[in-house]
Length: 189
Image (cartoon, rainbow, N blue to C red; front, side, top):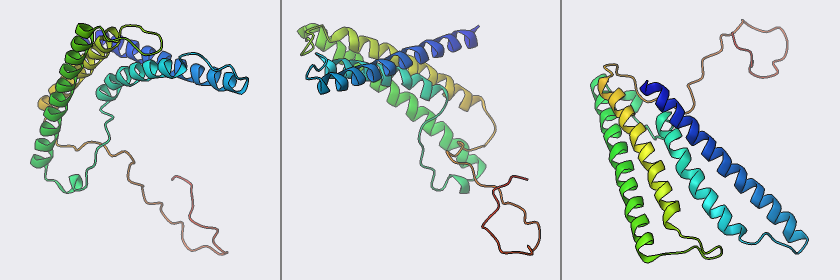
């Protein structure tokens, strides 16, 4: 049941992010054509700002759930299994804490914008609902970070985080060639 709900949430985040991205593309396209005709799209920059805001925060749960963070692991291949496990626990806790703090900051900012009645510059619409939506999306990211931390804490394996680029496998040589070489072989065994 929980997996089904999580899949549904991720599907919704994917749809929201894709819609926001397509909106940015459409606004940029229409505005650029309009500028050539001396008729730019009114409020285009504000539309792109709102779409980018929603795209970024709707994508955040997807990155967290897929454990697709960019990590720098200079010495992670040299860790002993116990140190690898400690590093995974520490980074999992750091991810949950950072995302939780980030969500709280968005909630606090939305409250301030709501309290002061802050409006957007061009369309003069209230800013608070947009930031409350960001807060909800940040909470979804926190949820998936907590699930990821639970997997790390329950996992007794000592594998490190996967590298962005896998190590290349050596290509076995087929013996000496009789003619001039045209470079390394690109064929997989």
